[in-house]
Length: 353
Image (cartoon, rainbow, N blue to C red; front, side):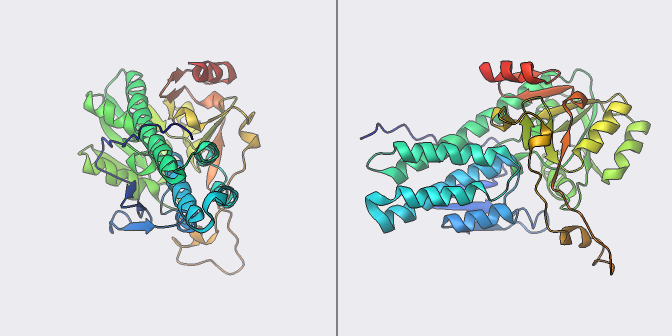
């Protein structure tokens, strides 16, 4: 019989709860409907969690990982109920399907691998032990958010505006957020006067989600189209561009929402420093560079929705992510500290701390 670890209940310092375990079920804030419709989706089995990850009910690399961890608990509960002591083989099949729900963000695989190891080490009460591990993953993410926020805000030495892309806030994590956590802490210190937010097409995570979070916090926010960032920087350069990450390769290449690469190029041209804020679980030292990352291709129909339909004979390409070369990143901020500039040696040093 294995020794039970103490249950860690996550204490979310924000008032946005994207992922919640409640009454033995996984409760997700439906991010497809925000900001106009605040609605939650309840998952009672792993299949429902997989659907919610694929369909972007829950999104953001850390939040996906947390949701998958709770999804593993639901999978184990059903397997134990149906197969008793022979639950583990079916549980492994469920974990494989969870792991493949979205291919690009490394946190999903990281969380599933932790839940696999916890299941293999479980004793007489595997479901409770797995729930402890899922809660531990959730609580650790909240703690990492707080540390990232402080490390990132320490880099901002001049009050002014900042710009961000996509959503790396409480909706994308277990707590304050990564990029938005830095922005929230810098605002608290009087170092942020305004946040410029790219719309982030085609899902509009910037205009729907990031702007919603910042406005709730009373932080001045202005939404611009993705293509307006260059003109904004030319006219009124921000002090920093601050984004999250879905994966960081061993050489420091950053995989993030499509449009991040464009923002980094524009920022470098205008002398605007570029910060990537992400937990160490996002660092993928097994992948040499961004060229080795599978970029998720989503339904081209997502692009045509804004146009009201596809013109006859026209095609669309809809990659969900892009790769920003490490050379365009001034600082990689994790809960373990800062790599500035990021690179293989700097990332290895971070992970060794």
